[in-house]
Image (cartoon, rainbow, N blue to C red; front, top):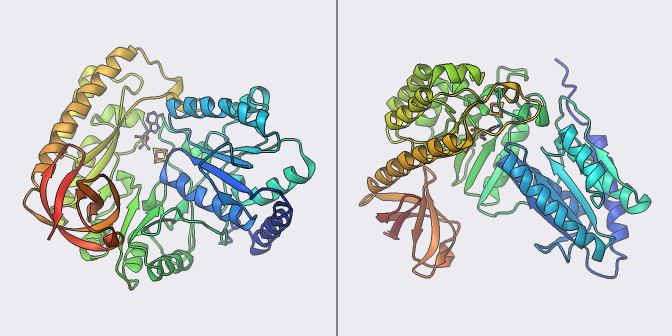
Length: 469
Ligand code: 5AD
Ligand code: SF4
């Protein structure tokens, strides 16, 4: 099978020469060239922004958090819900003042919003201070686009729809020295009826296992302690590869890499999360005992309308199979309230599933119609107020469960990764349990980046409190 999706090394080399050419230009600027990269949305976007920063660093840019100081502003956007889009439109609109004060500042908009034709059109017509618009598919050509704009001026739009490609060898500037993301695949083939992602990020395509394992080994050698394998649906990994690769096999190989680190992964579509995966999680000490398994709805009719391809019962069976192998597994999930046509009884099924499964944490969303998705065409008679009321009920139930689950930690000793400074002087450090729960504690900042045993002494709905053992 020929992999037509791979961008050739020569093409990446060419992009790096564009970086070099831009570096020669920026070296002559009177002030130090600075860039501001603002990221919305999911971890995949965070990972993309690290590649954008990688390119920018090669172009000679340093980084700032100030739009005023920046000579290039990159806004990496999310399209998953309308609210996220409105925030971006608001912030991008406000940049017109920055552009007025600094006409030479390049303003770039990228990510999933940019990939949607109606958004690109709106930016083209009504946000004329935006110089460059490009979707996820064009990210690897960012240096070339910047080079062209700096030498020829004008505006550029790279938002053509495509199935998507894989570009290896793009430089990265990572945001953290303890935690790292590693994309193992891109795109999604599931077409859940509410979701825009398959339209903005293209078809599923897997990176070569050797490249991924090499990257993880390098991160482990650099001292990274917490490595998250990323994909819209990691359990589809390898379907497009030769050699019988699948996600459990990749995970097991990654867990065999020497070093003191934990492996996590997200996201897992329940229909593709297999017992083989749960076995690997149970068997491998380096794989954190945690899984994010979005259920979206507790009602089978709604799940069918969502095109999720599992029933309530099948979801519950998966959770049983998982907990049989890892009784203390930390289980988190996503849920949508107010899908078009959802009745009160169907919503009650979602509540009852939450009570039955008792998730450790839940990401709760009110349905947001996305232009171009099948669900956006469905009749949606339920008033917004009713959806909000259901949403509030659901959050209340989950908060109670989260608190009960946290209380059960009190008195236990948890091996935690100390991952940063706390905001409160009485809890100067933040840590994460292997299952990813946040712990506040007091201690020497020199411990940041180390694993330590922490006795849990208290909790709230959102976090645990502890002390070093
Ligand atoms: N409306 C509300 N929530 C959505 N999600 C995805 N698309 C939508 C939408 N149109 C939620 C799902 C998904 C999470 C990342 O965002 O729960 O798992
Ligand atoms: Fe969207 Fe469904 Fe793909 Fe997740 S699996 S990215 S919800 S289409």
